[in-house]
Amino acid sequence: MATLTARVVPLPIRPGNGRTLVERNFLVYRRSWIVFVSGFFEPVFYLLSIGVGVAQLVGDFTLADGTVIGYAAFVAPAMLASSAMNGAIFDSTYNIFFRMKYARLYDSMLATPLRPWDVATGEVTWALLRGACYSAMFILVMLALGLVQSWWALLALPVAVLLGYAFAGAGMALTTFMRSWQDFEFVQLATMPMFLFSATFYPIETYPGYIRWLVEITPLYQGVALERALTTGAVSWTLLINALYLAVMGTAGMYVASRRLGKLLLK
Image (cartoon, rainbow, N blue to C red; front, side):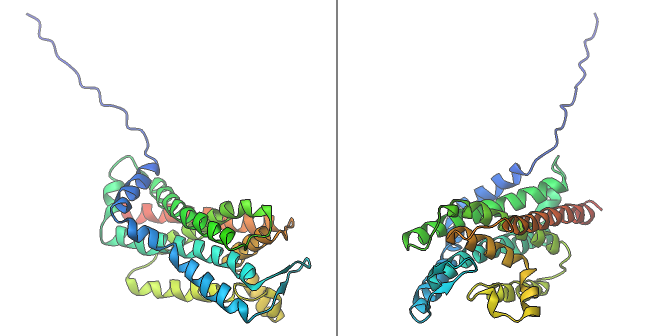
């Protein structure tokens, strides 16, 4: 009597994608939704205290195209850009460093079909989704306060996502070089001056020539210039240069992050 033998054919392993990591983060934050929602309030408090409170003591501003706006309308788009930066930096530095160095989350992920590029795209995508939620709510607050002057503001949310993409990619790349929590002091050393001096609270024209040039090459200024132009209607073709700057910054950061993750976790 013939013996039948069965041969087990392994299923083909298909490459993973970043969506798996996004789903994981969503499940984690679903149980701690208060932490997620709390990130929305900081920029709103800044807007109400500085943009609305101090606005009573400051006169109107005249933009480069001659448009006259109030101080609150001047500050609000800068707060939108700053919140996009801060949210992306927090998610792509502190959170990723903990998952990489202490939770060892990525070690187990790279034992699956996920690749370093999938991890980088998944984390950046999550940071963008989180930042988009904050930005959308902030824009609604701006509308409620009458701080939007143009229909171009419909593009303010995509620009906030683009700004988050730039800082999330760069932040994740820099995190792969950090050795301890003390290194995060350099993150604050970089983001705080940008927040204060990227034409956030006063026009770029107030700076001397050499300082103005230095401010204009910072990444946050690109986002502030884009958001302010869109919400006030002072749109020009030069904004494409600002958008290209942010797109290149984010893509370069993601590329470096994926290469570094491969070296650190697959060695």
